[in-house]
Image (cartoon, rainbow, N blue to C red; front, top):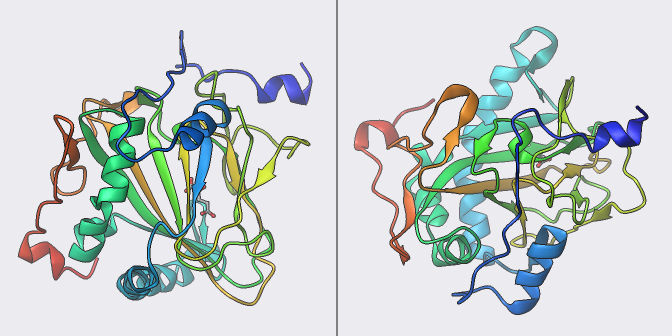
Length: 285
Ligand SMILES: O=C(O)CCC(=O)C(=O)O
């Protein structure tokens, strides 16, 4: 089997997958966005967040990311799994500690997209800030988000929000259009992350963004981010949403952690994020 065929092998748990187009009526999605999501697996929203929201989000994330960076510097080889000091950091579950980010995760723009692209009952699945540090020469390899933890239903939603301009030079996302249609592909673990293909291929397209813009894509859309060849930090906040009842199959995890996997849409209606319990918001972890 050659490399190209291997790239299109299916995940062992992917049986009988059928892609479903977004269902009308839409609350926020334009016809053009719906068509792009359905056929290509993604679309871009410019100015999804205004400048003051971006600024506040960065102010909430930066001190927490600094602690993650400090932790990475103290690890053997300055690494923890795929995170690397002065390279790439993952600051996870921020909604457990920041009421601002918690409220943001349930803001109308995200809740409406969840309603249109997932359905009437949707929970936050995961949130994390991903920072790529200056002059970090490594890519984040081609993967589908469902290649990390296999979730059923396989198609959930990722909103990759740029907090700084994301460019080809500093590590913006790249996408394989149409790569979502067969469901989850086979992945293998590399030093830089799970990977479903090695080569970019001529079909790969970059999705550069201005700060405040976002790429909305399926958990099944193959994507990568490039190296950061600039002297600035590339900052992204990634919010993911899954339908109520979703399950991480290998862990039998129902994806309904009360502290962070709350409803953002229930019975078709937006739901405000619940308040953080006081003891948690003051936690330094
Ligand atoms: O933001 C990045 O550089 C890569 C993050 C990503 O693709 C992911 O966490 O799935």
